[in-house]
Amino acid sequence: QVQLVESGGGLVQPGGSLRLSCAASGNIFRINTLGWYRQAPGNQRELVATITNDGITNYADFVKGRFTISRDNAKNTAYLQMNSLKPDDTAVYSCNARITPMAGDPGAYWGQGTQVTVSS
Image 1 (spheres, helix red, strand yellow):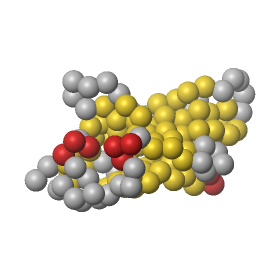
Image 2 (cartoon, one colour):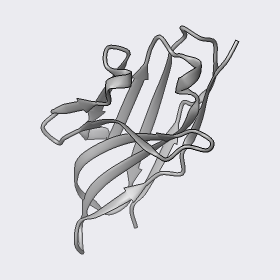
Image 3 (cartoon, one colour):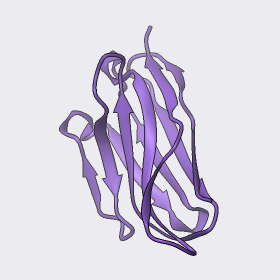
Image 4 (cartoon, one colour):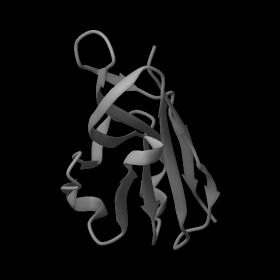
């Protein structure tokens, strides 16, 4: 069984930084595209950033220049470095991964999410 676990959220002042982690575990053959999404209260979930197995990244316009997505394939872990945080960045951040398991078909998996609150 494949599991994604996020960590690193918390309360930070405007202009501050946080680093989120997303660790995948289980019977994993390969992790393909990894992505970070967020959902603020009353809003739909939105894409923040993605990274392919080859390291190609894509960012939502509202985080370009402030957030950086990366991955460590040896650790089956993805990261989201968030700098210059704004109150509008407050949301639950969730990790999504397209994973090929040791047995069975590839599928999309979600973590449980981690709360990020930007407030003075």
